[in-house]
Length: 234
Image (tube, rainbow, N blue to C red; front, side, top):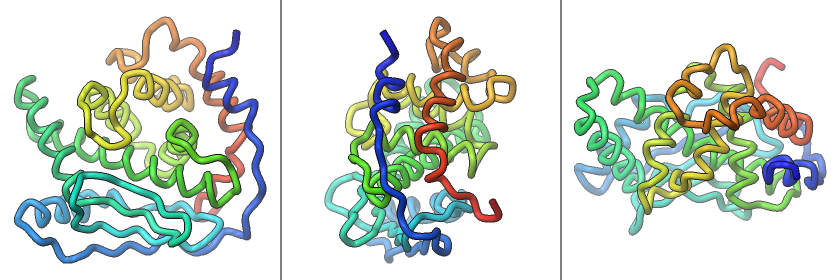
């Protein structure tokens, strides 16, 4: 019986969008609190929202104040929204985990950047799904996220897998919670280049018994939807 991810990929159909447009536009709303100001600074300093990817249509990315911590894709507005409160929640959770493990500041910063990079690319996955006329859900967004992250931010791949693994058991971390989802995401990242991303298996972020199938899972995803991921200069 094929793995659920492979079965999902084999069942996918899509329609091509228009020719790729210019890069995403990014806007930061004025923070309404000290915590939101810190979140804005973290996003800007880490350059999480900078990307060399292009989408089939113009897409806006807005970092903003929100009543609840979340990240969303609005197809009608062609807008990705990242709430400062969610960024703050990710930051505080990662910081707490690192303090418990007595991890130094540099490693903690890498984990934070990895978590926020994974979050942003998950939302890009939602955008790519609907802009290509495909059924949109979190699993499919993760498939796209694995492709876009490895193409766009290869140096953050290991940190993204680690951070998502650390956050998987924490409820309320929008789009980053879930043990099964974390393992599948890590498997796809590892499978994109097992030689380069060996630390993902060594860290235990993908089950050892599954590691041997990860390259096949990644190749299935790339074959099915890889032509929808466009890197500037390709």
